[in-house]
Length: 297
Image (cartoon, rainbow, N blue to C red; front, side, top):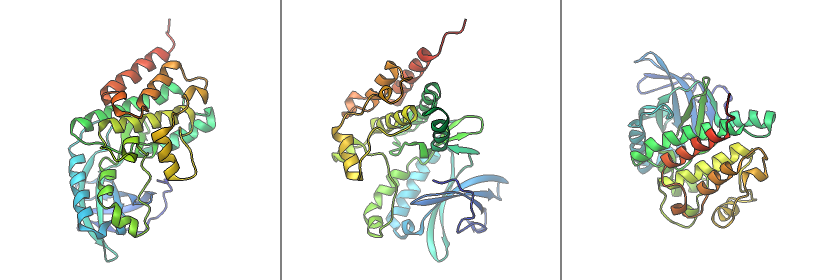
């Protein structure tokens, strides 16, 4: 989502019988807008994700969306953006589902990466490993609750002004899939989750699928680019199923063999060959990070 700070379509409006007053537009994407809002009941700032009205037309989607929001609200962790409330309201005559979330004062990981690319060509490896370990800490909690994120990428990770990593949009990808047929018929762009080899082959997605997405993200942080590029989404999906990614060190010579091995294991086509859990991958991230740091005398 672009963080443009512009006035959104609903800025100045409110939802939930006036409790949440929508203020500045924080970002906008293919399926939702995010507003800075004021919670008048609890006297605090919150962020409200308002889904575009095309998504609110189907009762089945709204019900799935509500259930996913309830599941995410049970997650409590430093590295997860908290969900406080969910509901639906009518704006401009259309039903609009919304989620009330913790307001994170900071910037998306994608913006942090863009700055690092300008300065260094990629994110410094120690920083990339630390960010990845924090994302995995969030996933460890969600996986224990049976919740697979399905769309880990820099755009769904925030960093606060103090450098705290916050993963957001848990459950959104799953909710989106419940209404994908009707939404495709409206011609709406519903987002671009990272293609997963198992999804392309029609197989079940589980916690190890998130670890593949984390591997893609870590590759991107270490090199400044994605491992696969092609002219169409279908060709990219094919690459994820059939092609082996290059080693990050072939793009960025400061990447160590241990970092290459970490990424390679996360990106195995067969989920059984990946790390068995987010905790196991996080442990390896921290081990590689520790080994990469110079010993101080």
